Length: 96
View (cartoon, rainbow, N blue to C red):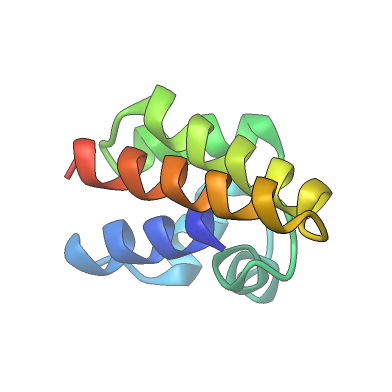
């Protein structure tokens, strides 16, 4: 979802490889790839580490991570889902 997309954007813009970040997080590269694709959820500690490694705003990254968790929870609720999309888009656009 949004968290994984943001991680990928930041990683690519800094010329980093998935395996480099995976090694710093002490996970294997396939697991990191799943986090970027949204197939696996990162732990809060990993999000904080990624913010440091990618030199990005920790509260913004934690907000996107949490928004993804909420989105997964309310995915069946159309109105909640639409509202959440608006909030996430706003967060992404305010910190670029």
